[in-house]
Length: 100
Image 1 (spheres, helix red, strand yellow):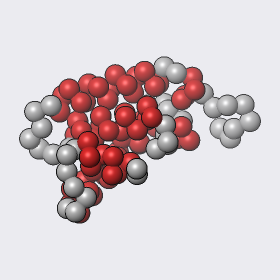
Image 2 (spheres, rainbow, N blue to C red; image 1 turned 120 degrees about the horizontal axis):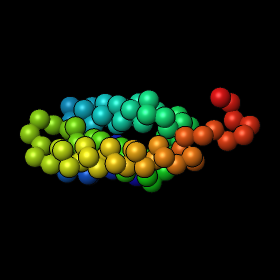
Image 3 (cartoon, rainbow, N blue to C red; image 1 turned 180 degrees about the vertical axis):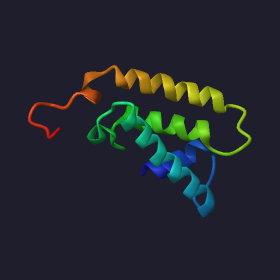
Image 4 (cartoon, helix red, strand yellow; image 1 turned 45 degrees about the vertical axis):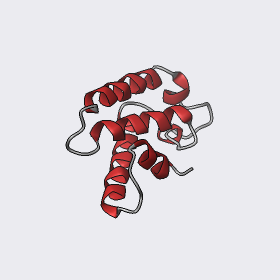
């Protein structure tokens, strides 16, 4: 399943509304940029990695919409998982032979 589809399911919405899909995709892109700016290597921010996917879903659920009573719960979950990822060398240190 594509990440955007998984995010839309997590948001309990449909991809039939292009406005909602666009907002969700913008938040996915923002989450990826935030992870990168936090020290996670760009090539590690892939949709195939289960922890990265979950982190992005937390971000989207935390910042999606205007009236989200659970926003702070998901924002905290995102921050906690992001910090955990940032503490793992496999996400933050380039392997020998990789371009810097």
